[in-house]
Amino acid sequence: MEIGRGPEGILSQEMTQKREEIVELLKTAYFMELETVMNYVSESINPDGVRAQQIKEDLNEDIPEELGHARQLGARIKELYGVVPGSMDFDAGQQLLQPADHQTDVVHVIKGVIDAESKAIEHYTRIIEATEDSDPVTNDMTVAILHDEQGHRRRFEGYLKEYIAEGKASKSDLPLSSQATSPEEGSAL
Ligand SMILES: [Fe+2]
Ligand SMILES: [Fe+2]
Image (cartoon, rainbow, N blue to C red; front, side):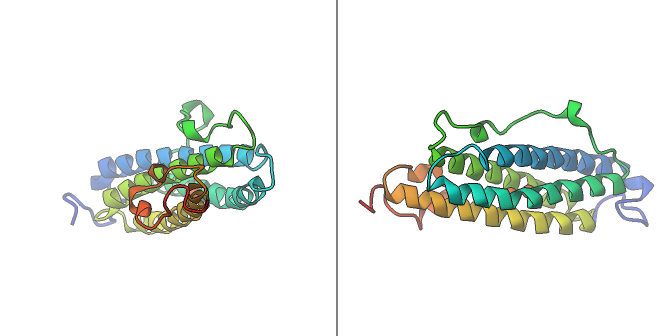
């Protein structure tokens, strides 16, 4: 049990400091989700070509889900007596998810998505650890969101594996845990 835990758990006066720490983590997650929405919108439109079609449709379908995550995080920030931030507090971070130089470069988009989802997975894992003993509600919500992000990343790992087999992407672009079950580079040729 958390030291200083009051009768109302995370909403107790004694838990103010912990609550503020959790709110900061949730604000970061909130902005990460909205940046993901921004970049999924652009990459559901920008890419050209037959093979880009599936990626664009996938990203299009993920947009409402990521926006839903942002909404859930915002609501939880408020429940914990925080204030949902406005855009002036926003710092962008998804460098790899910027538009490619050539719009037929689907591998660029797939790598950008895997990177963004990996960072989300890391951040949600951090929130789960931070709330483990103190805030079961935020913990539960974050576990569900983490599950969604793991699913998103796994789907795009699958797309990348196809390009690895063709020699158009490298195994090292995959998360370490995924490399063991991926094809050798150029093995489909
Ligand atoms: Fe998300
Ligand atoms: Fe996601």
